[in-house]
Image (cartoon, rainbow, N blue to C red; front, side, top):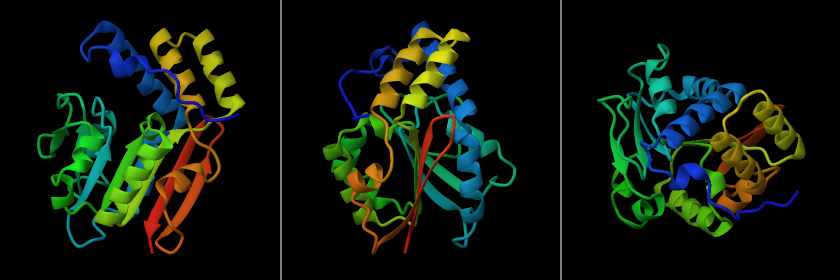
Length: 227
């Protein structure tokens, strides 16, 4: 099953406050819960939170409606140990913690400037966003990662497989809304498998220890720690 980037997802073009976009974001929250994405980030961040002698500064790429950040903020074991900066093209969500920063910008415009370089991010998170990017764009992101030299990367994306498509179709029959189904179908087709994301980001073995995992509900996960 080849990776395909052909169509634009509805949530990329719908006005953020439209009823359709709100319905799509609610459906995406359900998919994240089913896939276990948020709990995976919590488990991975637990050991590193507070391990740098203070609050750990983290960047979340494509933070969207702030669901992941607000979930992590409410986690007692992480409370006061993380400071996550959210980055997205949409305005700061109302649920985003007041103590945390928000950057309203296109990712690649932000990478092209000096704003992100001036901040000492120890880690970078991305949840269901990197599949939107072409190999060339992921290469640009990889060059920036190499330049700023974070200590860890936690990325969760769709697993590109026929089983993932079948499971999504079954969720549609069970009531998943049209926006989430449409976007989910395209997301799976543009998702990752095997070592693809490591290769696209050009994470070299001499610099990174990379662990790739997946689960039966269609999550593809990359955990990378600096050597």
